[in-house]
Image (cartoon, rainbow, N blue to C red; front, side, top):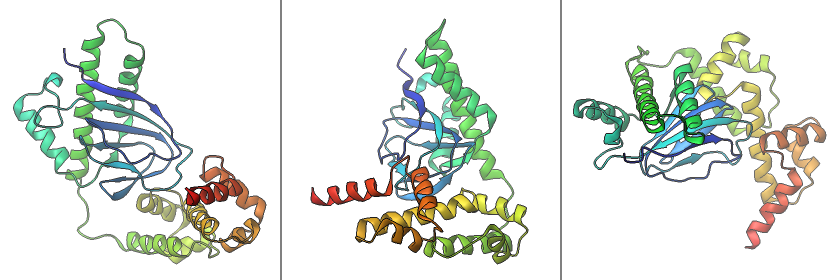
Length: 279
């Protein structure tokens, strides 16, 4: 039987380099809030999401650092004329329907659900430690993964959504843009919620839906991004840059910087960036 699974595993990278795969990739994000791009278009990939790319689609991190996460992934061999290998056993009508659904989707990240995590987890375990009737089990699990992916995509497509965003969504989107443009501004969670005219609980829910992250973590991420730019562009002291980016103390800045860069210190980042410029 032709090989169905090209690659599988459990992953965690500080940055997913832009790359292309020969086959259909399906990823379930167990933990962490990611921002991945597909063919240059970025979208949030929060925990519990399933993310897919078609054969030869470029994808990878849209952020410089994305530590503190874990995913399960599988890359399935493609067919001669589409993303689905004939060994999966779909009828021609089913193959056309699923391929059309995946090719026609503008999004690549969807609510995953427990079923997808279970299927990919069992498939990864079977590939790592083959058991009795290995090939039959791989075929069954790979087929189930494609079916579950198609269900996730279709569930989003058929979900009844408002023709326009709600007022709350629009206000939160404006806040996201304001914070990204000026992360050094002093914000508390209460001030953010008040800016959007929402209670804290409702605000946190809408914000996570719009930004793929909690308000506090998003603000920290934007400040670390600003600090990275300043560390690359000027020779001011790290303490000065910490205050310039909105951190109250250099110690707190050091803690948050390491958290968002996979343990790297600000001085290490500056030295690495300076070395890269000399190459």
